[in-house]
Length: 449
Image 1 (cartoon, rainbow, N blue to C red):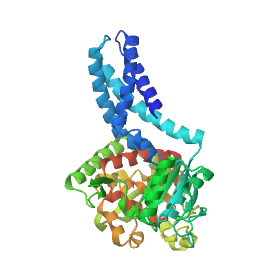
Image 2: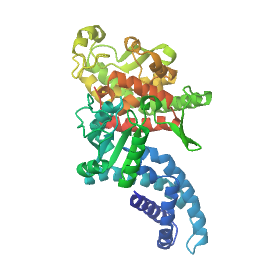
Image 3: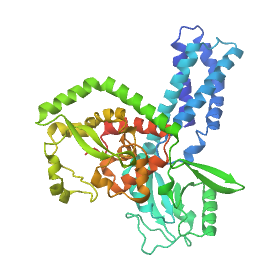
Image 4: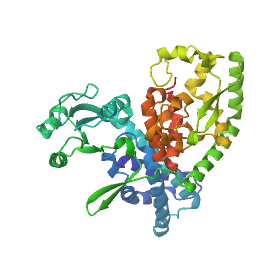
């Protein structure tokens, strides 16, 4: 990762120096070389290397705020540096181009490295220690998403009797196994450890042994489903305390989110108006019936609204729901691999998600948000109760965690949980990341149905 950062910084400097009409490009670049160790130190200050051994899966988007800050500070320092060395001063345009390209090249190189390493060296082999209710789902998701770069090799529970995790081999009992032997035998590189069922002494001994073996360690909290990713780790005289986000958004956060929605929907409608007109024409010519489909959905605070989509089904499709429910792959909602009601044009619109474009009008009206929980129909919403109703604290979105992580490949129950985690862990950067990842999901048609 450090090597890729050096290549990115040097490449950005080459383009910035040679693309501007300033003499002495070669001397400028030579004077950049002594600063390269300083760039590594600066990136280290922003924790861009230490987190690599702690994190699981792709993290380029998570790095971007730190990369942005580091490049801003580093470019300012470079400006001062070139005033002190016997080379041509860094002009404004050079600094601007270098900063912008530095952010782009560094992010791109990190993305390439994270894709290349698992392909060249193989996936990271993972051993699970302890057990937790969420463990079977965790193993299933790791296997379903190769982008995490993990390969489960086995489980060591505190009580092997009656425990299974989607065919994961049981490699012994937590209190009896020799961790060093298991690591050597199965070529383990990372442990995912659950505290459930294990004594304090056993866990401390295991963690110490992990340090001796230089293993990567990930801890699975007992309440991982409710905590979510946005936690702050505090220390009170050696005792770790986790700080969670407030369960309700402040007025300023709601105003900021709504402002993003209005600007995004307005720009989207203006830029995509020719495409919207073409899709409307294709729907009209493809089959008889109206161009738009309107359906009542449940929005923020349980209020109903009419969601708009381009029609993808034959007229009267709603009357066939009860008949088709017997063939549904999910008991909580209608999910069919081959829905006979979908038109030929509608199939293409669903695969490309173009049928969702009219929802930009819903966003502009305030019924929906660009990013948010999935808008449910009334019968689906009636099955959601208790803590899961928190998902209605924010307006439903055109995209969200469910859409980005797999759409129809994710069961209804897990979709509700993802919506809860989104609402309780909301941030501006989370919305930005989900919008960026939505474009990739649409291009790959992941989970489209």
